[in-house]
Image (cartoon, rainbow, N blue to C red; front, side):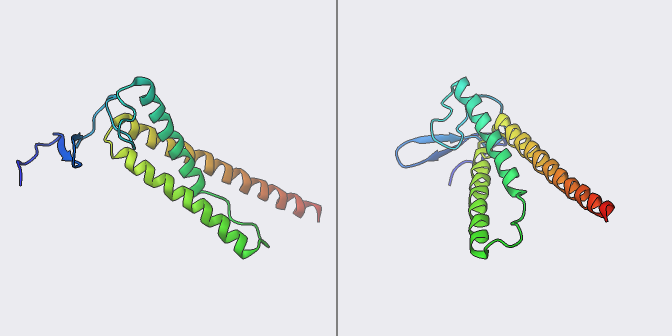
Length: 145
C-alpha cells in the first residue's frame, strides 16, 4: 500500500504520466494550484487574480442564493425557467468555490469567506430596504384612507 502520511505532509498522486504533490493542510503562499493545473503558476499577479476570482465568485453565489421571489402573475413556465437558470449558475459557482478552497490555500479560503460574507450583506441589506419600502408604502396608503 504505502507509508502512512504524517499530518500536513504532501501526498504524491499519479495521473498516469507524472507525479503531482497535493497539499493536505492549510498553507499560505502563491505556490498553489487553484481550479486548473498550472494556475496561478507561482506568479504573484496570477495568484492575486485567483484570489479576486474566488472573492467575486463567492459574492455572486451568495447574491444569487438570496434572489427575490418571482412576481405575482408571472407565467409559471417562465418563472420556473428563470429560477432554474439562476439555480444552475448558483450551484455551479458553489461547486467551483468548493474545488478552489480544496487547494488548502489560506488566501483562497479567506477570499471565499469574505466574498460570501459581503454577498450576504449586500443581498440582505437589499432585502431589508425592499421590505422597508413596502412597509412605508403600506403605511402611507393607510394614512391616505
